[in-house]
Length: 472
Image 1 (cartoon, rainbow, N blue to C red):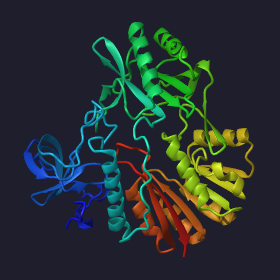
Image 2 (image 1 turned 30 degrees about the vertical axis):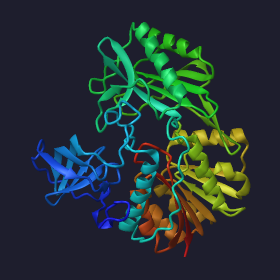
Image 3 (image 1 turned 180 degrees about the horizontal axis):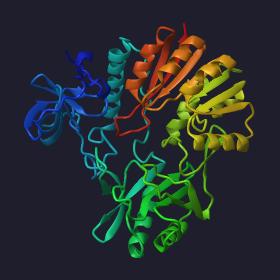
Image 4 (image 1 turned 90 degrees about the vertical axis):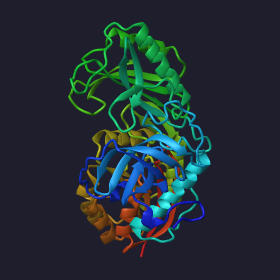
C-alpha cells in the first residue's frame, strides 16, 4: 500500500543490511522493465520483478525503466538503467556533469526539497521496520541552506589519461578513478587549488607518475586538501617515495602563491596498504595543521584528523549534544574522535571522559585540550568495547554522548550501557539502519525521547540522526 506521497509501506521497504544471504544465479545481462516503487536505504531505486526485489542506482520512484541485470542473488537483483521509459515526476536535471559516473552523489537528479522529503521517509520506514517503533518521535529534518559546496575536505586520487595527469575520485561502485575538473560538493577554494596543482604537474611533468596499488609502482598516491571556515588551506601530497620530486615542489610553489595557504606537506607512504597516509612527512611550507573553531573551541587538525566535512552541520550537532545534557554533568564521550561533540560545551559540564580507538585522533585531542586550556578532560585510548565495563565500574556518569562508526555500537557497549543505567544518552548516528538496530536493543532500558535528522551530506543518500534517550 502507498501513502499520499507515493512511498510504499514498511513491508515493501528494505535496507541493504536486511537483504538475504547471496545465492548466485546467472541472469546477468538480461534486460527487464520495471517501475520504481521507492528508495532503499543506500539510495538505490527499488522495484519488484518476478517475486524478486530489484535495486537500481539513480532510478527514481514512479519512473519506469528498462534495466540490465548486473547480479542476481536469492530473490535480490542488482541492475543498472539502460534507458528511462517514463520519467519520474521527481526528476530534475543534475547540476554536475559527472553525476551517475562519479560515486560522490546519489540524489542530485532530484530537487533538494524532494531529496529531503525522501530522506525523512526512509528514516521513518527504517525505524518502523527495524526498531519496531510505529510513530518515532521524529522532528523535521534540518536542511542545509546552500546544498552545494559544503565539503571542507577532499581526498583526490591521481589518474593518468594519455600524457596528462588528472586528479579525481572513484567511479561509482568501483575502484576505478575518473578525472574530475570540478566537484560541486566541495568548497570552491578546494576546486581552485586542485586545478592549480593539476596544471602545474602537467606543465612540469618530469618524474611524475601515478601510483598503481596492484603493482605497487608509481609515485603520486593522493592529494588531500582541507579548508577551514576562514578559507585557510592545508595541502598534502602523499607519495610512494622518500623525498619530494621536482614536480611536487613546483606544484607546491604554484599553490603557495594563493592567499590563505596554512601549510603544504609531503607525506611518505611506501607500504602496500590501502591506508592513505604514511608515518613520515615533510613540511614544504607553513605548518602541519589547520585551525577550525566551533563554539569557542579551536581544533588543531592535521591532514589525517577526523573532523566532519560540513562545519556548519558539525556545530549544530555539538549544540544539540550540549543542549540535551544538564549543567554540571559528568559526561562520557564514546567514539569521541577529537572531542568535537563535547568540548564546545565543556564549561557547563563537571568533567568529560573521552574514549577513542584511533591513536592519532586521541593524541590530537590531547593537544586540543592542552592548547585550549580545557580542564577536567580524561582521554582513554582504546576500543570502546574493550574499555566500557571498566570505565563504568570506576565512575558514575550523568550522561553519555555516543557517535559510533557506520556499523553502530558493539553489543558489549549496549549491554554495558543498559547495566549502568546512565540517566541520559545522546546518540549521533551516520547510519539510520544501525541506529534503528541499536535503538531496538536499548528500548528495554531506555526511552527514545527525540530524534532529529540532519542533512549533513546534501545530494547523497547519507543522513545524520541526532537522538536523545532517557533511562526508564
